[in-house]
Amino acid sequence: MDFQLTEEQKLVRDMARDFARNELLPRARKHDAEGKIDPEVFAMLSELGLWGLTIGEEYGGAGMGNLELSLVLEEINAACASTGVTVSVHNSLLGAPIKRFGTPEQMQKWLPGLATGATIGCYCLTEPNAGSDAAAIVTSAKRSGDGWKLDGTKVWVTNGGIAKLAIVYARTNPDVSKAKGISAFLVPLDTPGVKIGKTEKKTGIRGSSTTEIIFDGVELPADALLGEENKGFMIAMDTLDGGRIGIASQAIGIGRACLDASIRYAKEREQFGRPIGEFQAIQWKLADMSTRLDAARLLVHRAALIRDAGERVSEAAAKAKLFASQACNYAADECLQIHGGAGYTDDFEVERLFRDARITEIYEGATDIQRIVIARSLMA
Image 1 (spheres, rainbow, N blue to C red):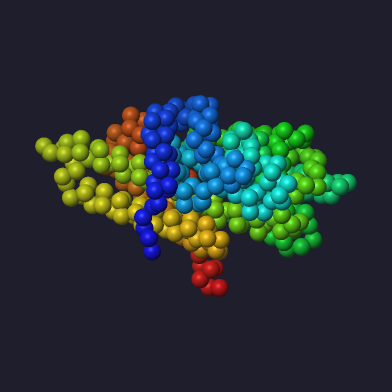
Image 2 (image 1 turned 30 degrees about the vertical axis):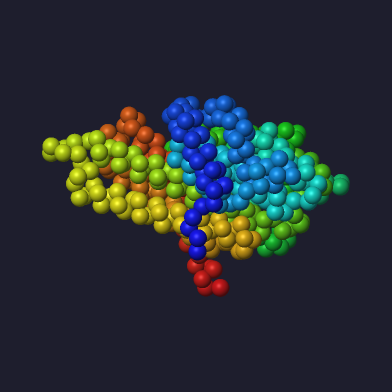
């Protein structure tokens, strides 16, 4: 096994690192306070090609893989997790399923705009009564002439307030078991009948847009269907495999920022006549944080490579998401502890990192769901 990155991968990582440190980090506090991302950031993401990192060059993308996306997401999230999740969802939850399941016509229609960031994407699966039990959705798509009529409400939609295109999962056959009667649709959000509902006020990742989206009698053409009719749940689960690699990468980025902040503070803060970093209790915290994050990174990169190879990745992605999100929250907790009372104020970035870290164990499948996915794979 080769643990070395290629020269191209190093260049992509370093480009993302420079962008994150020079442009995102100075804006991260503002994004958090104002609840939105600076529009200039969207333009810079476009200039750097980060909206279409995994979209083919024939559609204007960079034509790279999930490993390169993981490297980029770690760097972005180490600076600003709000920007990180925005980029992750756009790439892994919308661009990826169109690339994997779309017709040539759908790819030609949508991927060029997604690649440049002219069209931002979002993923509409979760409903008020269908979270971890994703197959329990009640949003419906019924035949209407040659097309479909879409009705229902989706919640916790990342990018909902800024997106122009959504992948929406709806029940197309109510007479079969839950997972077997669901289809996926590509829905432009300027279609009549689409309404952006409540904007969520979140504990962390406050700069990212998280909204409710309501579909009230939305008329869709026949070619809005992505993949086969009643096969949408499979698309949703395959897409979440990639999304979990993205959020695991986010977790490593946030965790790494916690470790870096802890090291800086341990060198600067003095108690009992010497820097607290000289005390073994602090050193052990730093050692454990670093070890867990390194182990998480190996799991994430392995999952990314498996997906890039076209192999089944559900178990590997779940392990990466499970371990990385826990390592992230461990690092955030220890970082706050090392900072003491000062860390519980917004004078230090740890307060924001601590809030941002918590979501990594919840979205794209909660920690408990990752354990179920892993266990089912083992028992199979």
